[in-house]
Length: 239
Image (cartoon, rainbow, N blue to C red; front, side):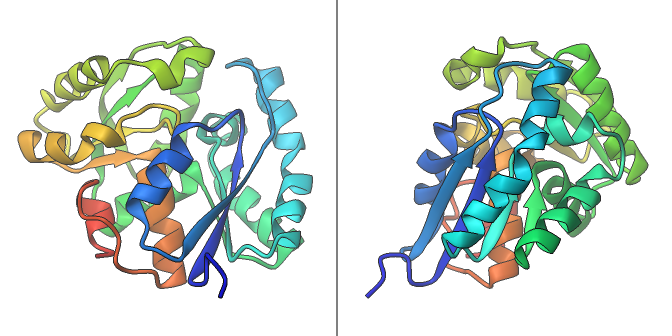
């Protein structure tokens, strides 16, 4: 019997990925596996984003050769750097190359917004100003208004080691914007999922995380249920 007999999710990471697999196997039911490749970018600069996007086609082909059932691309800032609508273009391109369903970090988040009926959110990011501007522009184009932005400007190679207390403070600061219907934390290299569930209960609003929205997108498409209820409102829909 195959170890991952229910489904195998392919993941294209723009850089090293430490926390995505950590959370993946805590969230999914037994029999669902993760197959990952990385494009090895080294920072927030546009040239690094371009390098990462140039590697996507070959990465997608390799995941298809490995027999995955769905492909996720985790580079929200990379996709946003190409402007509104590029999430759909990249998803169509990957599907065209592999004949597999696909989601991007940005596209999955937009679908999660629509699933929850959210049109106004507060954003908490580690991004520099230009990346924030690109990201907000893409959300605005989809009818999602950003009511407040908490930008922590974390060094690229220190994302995974951001203290949970820092993330909690950022989310709580964003939650002070009463008009925001949700808090969006778009960075899969942040350990935000460790506290997202309890924080949601405390602030009374959904917290959309990159890993959470991408897994929800992939698993719901594949019809996977039995997902852990410990990681927030969105993923709990798959229980």
